[in-house]
Amino acid sequence: MSDELEALRARVARLEAKEAVISTFNRYLYSLDTGFGDEILDCYTEDAVLDVPNFPGAGGNDLHFEGRAEIAPLYAPYGDREPGIGGGHHSANLAINVDFECKKAEVSAYFMTSGANGVQGGRYEGVMRHEPDGQWRWETLSITSAWGWRATEFETITEPVTLKYSPFGGHPVAYVPHGG
Image (cartoon, rainbow, N blue to C red; front, side, top):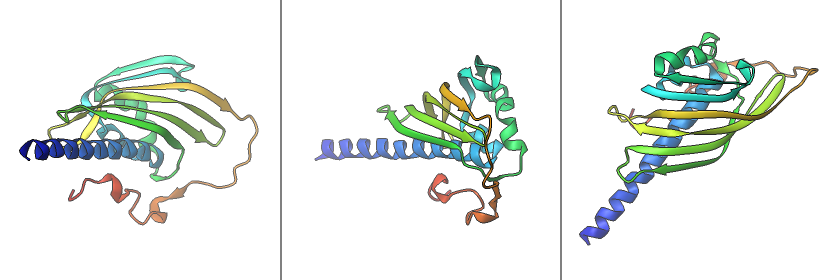
């Protein structure tokens, strides 16, 4: 019975780790869309490595960053604006493989982003690490833009709204660790 109990505990620990990784991934996307710059950066370890192959904002060139301080300028425009409900980062086919020690997790997902004048998509692929403070953060991340279209003519039918429309002030309770 003791072996069965240990096996069950290990499975539960991996499932809890997987849920925490999903929460970090969703917090990352949500923070991009609402303008919470500090929370975007908090999804990365201090020594994180970020690669952005084929980055549209750099003319399709590849970007490489080492460490949170080097990564910060890439996300500065997200945190410089008034926080609001923007929307735009969508993910699908999220796959997570948590190691047996629950220290690291491989993460991959397709993404699509939309804005006022275009749409693009690609893949997120990386490794999250369980940090001493109990949080999961990106240790490595590759954001590959694989396709995109820009509209030359469009009509804006709605404007972004402030966080006053969010019952939780823009911070969904689902992204806060239980008891945190």
